Length: 161
Image (cartoon, rainbow, N blue to C red; front, side):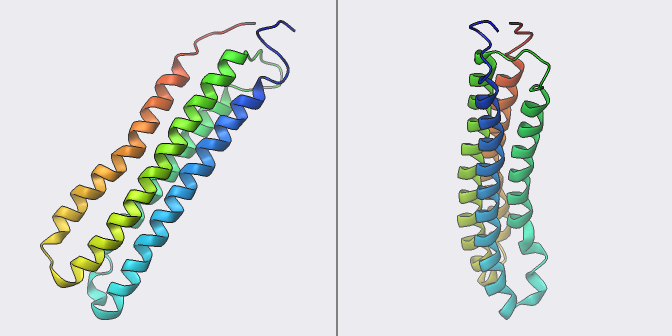
């Protein structure tokens, strides 16, 4: 083994996989639960509005998919018989962290906005378009993390030890 490819280098790659999966999933779970509380409150008064109010829940679920995509891409480049450099491990850790942290932030934003807008939608139906626009802006936070992770993952190239 060379100095560039120590046997413990895949630890950092798998730490990136863990960061992408756990943090984006926690963000999606928070967004789902927070928006779900607002939907439950809305459903007791106007049950016909429940289906239109599920948009925040669907959008927060997409955040978890971003983390899954990054985790699969990172883990596919780590194998027992493949050389894996320390540089690749750090790049994969950065990619997973970028996707995970932005997923956490996006899920938090979607949850707060979803809860507030669904409750406001109960009283004023014109808030629906504004709710969707603000949710799109919150979702873009997670999308930026996915794009950064994809750019980082492709920047490794063929690093051979």
